[in-house]
Structure formats: structure tokens, C-alpha cells
Image (tube, helix red, strand yellow):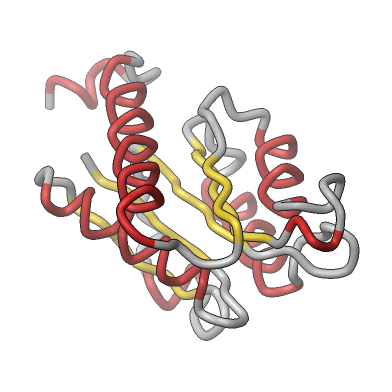
Length: 160
């Protein structure tokens, strides 16, 4: 499966989660395009605008649970190039100390924008130890299994 994994990270927490997701996807034999939305855009990572089977987007949250401008730009580029993909899984990092209503707000907003049926992954601050590692692995396995079980809208593509 072709997967695009894009993230934005301020302190490195979201990047750490993205690395774990990336490693799990590759370990399971998937082709992953990695985009650090803080320093890359879609055209740089995918010059041909190639579509993917699954889009995984990760973000930290700013200003009362809002989405950082780097991820907003990336999403606008994605929608312009490939339209609004149906298969979008979202993860985020956040801090409950700023209020539960703001915790992982960007991930919640992104998931709502795409209307994704996938579960969200939310990690408090940075991934800590075996519990978070297992949570990330299980989430990744779940979204991959869901994607593989959903028939593709373009059936000839499946058989080509």
C-alpha cells in the first residue's frame, strides 16, 4: 500500500510519534512517503502529485487547540492537488494541562475537516515508554487493517 505520512512538530513530540508510525508501516511492507510539513511541501515530496492509498496526518495544537499554519498549508495543497481524500487517518500530541477541550484540538479539527471514519490517535506530550509504543502500534495496525478492508473506488486500479 502507498502511504503518505505528513506531520508538523514544534518540540519533536509529534515527530517522534510520526517516526514510530512510519517504522511500523515500513516493517509491515508498506511504501511510505514522509513529509515534514515544517520544511517540505507536497510538491517537493511528490513532484508528480501521485495519489496514495492512505494519508496519515499528524499535528500538535496551537492557540486553544487550533491547527498550526504549516499543517493548514499542507492540507490546502493536498486538497488542491488530489482533492479531499476519503482515506485520512489523523494523530496528534497535546497537553491536557491547557484544558481537555483544547487537548489535541488540531487532530480533532483535521479529522472533522476530512470527515474521517478512522479513529484518532492522541498522545499526551511525547510518547513515553512501552504503553505509548503499544498504543501507537495498535492504532497503526488498526488504520492499516481498516484501509485494506475498504474496497478502492477505482476497481481497475486494484487489478492493474
